[in-house]
Image (cartoon, rainbow, N blue to C red; front, side, top):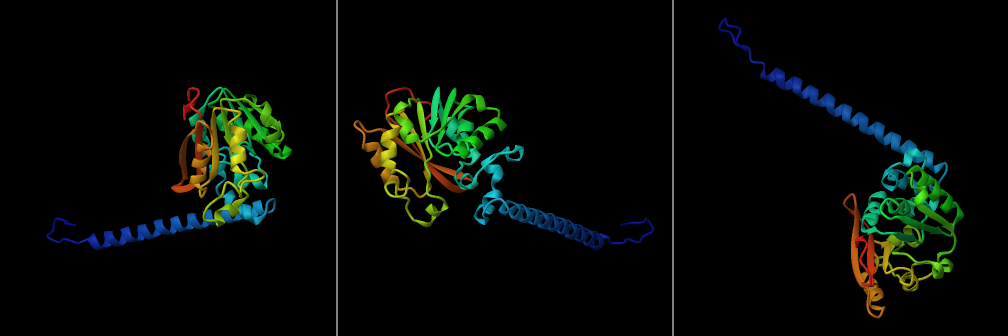
Amino acid sequence: MDFGNGRTICTLGAEKNLAGISRKKKMKRIRRRRQLSERNEEFQSLAITEEYPTSIAKYWCQRYQLFSRFDDGVKMDEEGWFSVTPEPIAQHHALRCGCNLIVDSFTGVGGNAIQFSQRAKHVIAIDIDPRKIRYAHHNASIYGVEDQIDFIKGDFFRLAPSLKADVIFLSPPWGGPDYTKVDTYDLKTMLKPHDGYFLFNIAKKIAPFVVMFLPRNVNVDQLAELSLSSDPPWSLEVEKNFLNGKLKAITAYFSNGSTNEPNGI
């Protein structure tokens, strides 16, 4: 800095020192916020274990991906935490399945049914568990779509002969989180209470479009076998569903080609 008297004082070192101090303070604030966030998540995880087993704690941190309106009072049972379709994927399913009437065969706590109701004219949501049906209805009311969904407590396999729709969506029980422990998910042995072949044969009598939401490690060759098991064969599209850059699940879209396809399929 020139004071006009021939003397120049260099302040560059001081400016660098001040900048370094500023950066250190900023990093301390960031670390402090991160620690507070981690403590908050830890506290929330501890809070949820008072109501649910510790195995659910990791899903608690993903709650806003399961339901964006979780804080408005969304309800889930233990199974719902690890079986509900994450909302971004459910929204994608709905975009691809716009139609007049869609059947959600294993609706659980309603994640897919809620999104379907915003793209289809009407939704039939079925589950054998009365608590899940209550929760699904409650959650639909949070999203303001309960009047567009018929909630039915019952066994899908017993109801199937009386059902007709444009699209049928199948997200059957995968057997809990343990499906990730095997290299390949076998549709013949791992789906309960009936295998994937039985399920597909029931579904294709209900609608000309069948959508199956399955584990990411499902045997894709078996999906091809399903499409070829019909005479004439049904068309098949296998879609990989990613969430936050990670493969989450597989969706199989089957069509018999007899009618115009729903939006996106």
